[in-house]
Image (cartoon, rainbow, N blue to C red; front, side, top):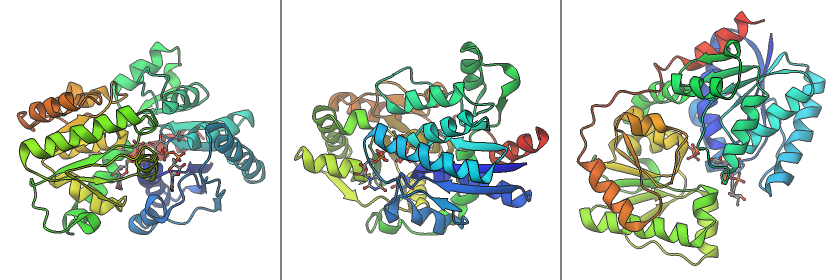
Length: 358
Ligand code: UD1
Ligand code: UDP
């Protein structure tokens, strides 16, 4: 059974790392294609170095670009490699353009597709990710759903039960495999003298938030209000898309400490020790839930409703007053929720299931 793992962005490198480790551990015949969707050192290479991941056999270096242009370049590049390598199955993770291109290239060649983190839905087609995940799910042969709820969603869309495997989310594996190492370090590049519980952590990079001047300004104002009300700093390791848009819209962020995007271990530690996290990231909603850190989500919807259902997360959108209100609400909650995303063995399960279906 020859497996091709396709990755392209920061969250895919992190969330596929447990699958790569499981392939190594189980002696699987596998290779990795990196599309190069993310390419800056601190959005890509740093994670390979820190997680000790083997280099990709192929890097397409597609870089940034418009959706069609970027996805098209990936599609052509992946197709060529798949024709030459003839894998039995292609694995993709999540909802990026890399996932769309990988799943599409493989399925058109009649190669089986495994979608890790299948069955998530925001029901918001303004999000490019929603389109990517719907298409990927419907052309996949193995749907690795993180939760029972995701499985139900897939069944509701007519996907056959035999294709669906509830594995948990590999984000739990990644957190469990790295949190102790992270806790043994200081806060890295985030700034000096941050006491546990003595700061808020923020991330925002969703296209529908930061490419819209009004929405992005609402988020930054909300962060300022939160910092002022609780007299604590807000640390925002800023994604390159957001940095670019802040400059384009001439926005500033009073009361908010901007840093470069952080390496994974520094970021995990900052998350684990934060008083509260404010984010529009998918992975960060999950990680805070796992780490028992309250989360305020700067979106109108989420494809991770489990986080809100267990009481770990509240959705507030981008209105500054609602962001402040959400922070007050979450700071008043006890942190005794259950982690709904599995036991940290998802990566092992994915590889075992594939080898059982040779
Ligand atoms: C992509 C994913 C998104 C995911 C995010 C993870 C899609 C449609 N979007 O969004 O689902 O949450 O990755 O972080 O696939 N840039 C750099 N260096 C990099 C990468 C990006 O400078 O290494 C800048 C470029 O200006 C680029 C912009 O960020 O144009 C956006 O990058 P892109 O990969 O298109 O989308 P993301 O916003 O990163
Ligand atoms: N992350 C990181 N450094 C940062 C911000 C995030 O290592 O400065 C990690 C975080 O721990 C999580 C992942 O990146 O595992 C989330 O990626 P992102 O928010 O870019 O994408 P999304 O999950 O929204 O697709």
